Image (cartoon, rainbow, N blue to C red; front, side, top):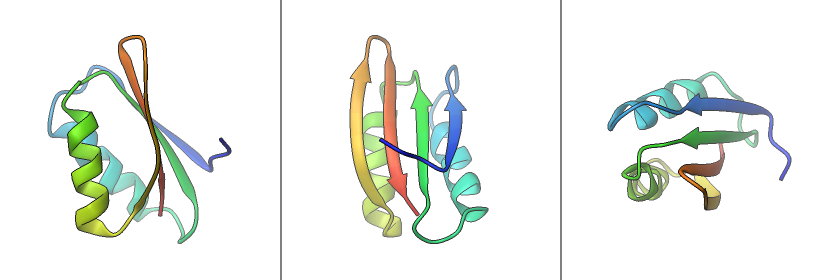
Length: 74
């Protein structure tokens, strides 16, 4: 999937992947896509809840080994 920016949230524990995601999205324009890579298993449910609460579109969520990869549209 094509994306405009990537956020490396590996090694960060809850709530930091969401905090960093929110900050990164704030610096992006509407319609741009952010790729987030995290290692915290809690990020899976947190990212879904964040997208629903903020109106960002969660385009994809997948597990690759011990990493979780998300694509959010701003």
